[in-house]
Amino acid sequence: MNPYGPVAIYLCVALAAALLFTVLPGLLGRSKPNAEKSDAYECGVEPTSAVAGRFPVRFYLVAMLFVIFDVEAASFYPWAVQMHALRVFGLLEMIVFIVVLAIGYAYVWKKGGFAWR
Amino acid sequence: MEISPGHFLLARLDDVARWAQSSSVWPLTMGLACCAIEMMTVTSAEYDIARLGSEVFRSSPRQADLMIVSGRVAQKMAPVVKRLYDQMADPKWVISMGACASSGGIFDNYAVIQGIDTIVPVDVYVPGCPPTPDGLLYAVNLIQQQIREGGRGGILARA
Figure (spheres, rainbow over the protein chains, first blue to last red):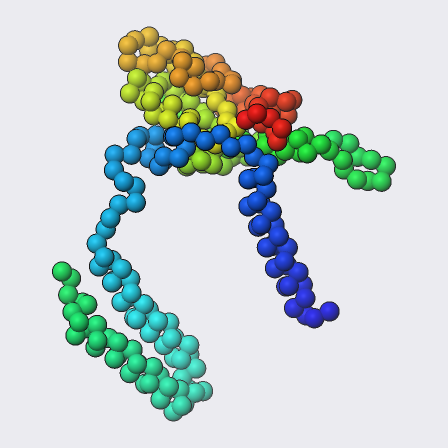
């Protein structure tokens, strides 16, 4: 047997179990809907406003900008650990990587993405 | 359920469902008054409601099977209790814990509901002021017994 055979079997069983437990309640359970069940849960109090409220789009902006710095930090770490083994090649690769990020960084700065309006 | 000579465990699907249901009666996280302290005590090592499978106090009525009304219900709280009960998934059970929840107790006045069975259907009343944790455990036991002996619950039941 392929050494990864058990893993494949495990994946199939996990998928089957997940599907079973997702589908079975719908088939066997009895649905008794009412208005309160469909309503939002606010600790027993009637919701006074829309639950999925609106919020400023700049939160998305911050989340996207975060990715730049996060990916940078996450990529630096394995390189830093293997820095001596990778020698000049690793250093050049990292410089290319930073230049690509820096272009994006400069673009965001120029567009005023860091100004909190 | 029975074990046949070939060592197969045979059971009706409904019995299995009832066994599973009665072994996982999950209460709603809802403490109303002093009785709630005794209710919290049943989760302690001393009383250990986990033995009955009911240690998972759910923070959402969508996942709860059992409402433990642990204390006096003020007129202002009544619609909240009713709404939470309505939001729980069927089938669902209610324990009225203590004298206040069951009859208003010492609060014989206009501000307190004189027995929560006027707003939600109660399955088991626990006497006491407050009841001991053993009393609450026994109430959960009674509900388990109800489910296993063909009360509400099971696959074939009208929830």
